[in-house]
Amino acid sequence: MHGEDFVRELYDASYPRLVGQLTAFTGSREEAEDVVQEAFARAILHSRALLAADNPEAWLRTVAVNHARSRWRRLRRFAGLLPDLVADPLPAEDDATRLDLFAAIQTLPAAQREAIALHHLAGLPVHEVATTLGVPTGTVKARLARGRAVLAVRLRMDETTEAPHA
Image 1 (tube, rainbow, N blue to C red):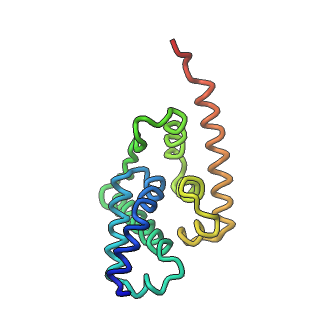
Image 2 (cartoon, rainbow, N blue to C red):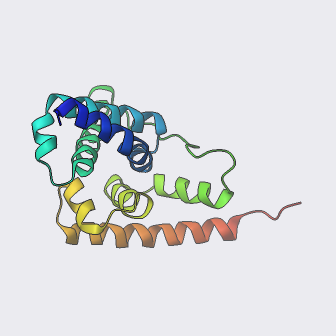
Image 3 (cartoon, helix red, strand yellow):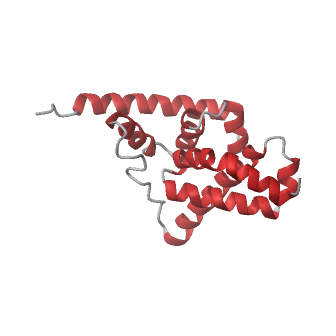
């Protein structure tokens, strides 16, 4: 199978899953779509590397994560702005608990947010998160533990400070 045909089939099989994972990672569906599209464009340019990869979807995810990080750095450096995280990237019919969780995740430091998004929301095992982020597994475990601890406190605080419904 030729590189472009392989990429086309991989696109059909992986695009929705990658966009879902990167939405959790970036906080924005539009941003996720952009970086996943860029990953597939690079896959066409570097089809040999993609074909040689043990896990082509992981290769694409790593490219997309790296591209998202580059965009964030560029925004910070040139515009002095952090990326705006969309306040409501989930469909309106989702329950308030999911919205509260997503809002709490957005408040985490970037390293913890990335680890939480990839592990808990995208369902990647710790070793794959480590590979994607380019850090040791112990670092991922520490970021997950710290992030979960912060989320537990923040979500508990939201429950206790919520006004009673009329």
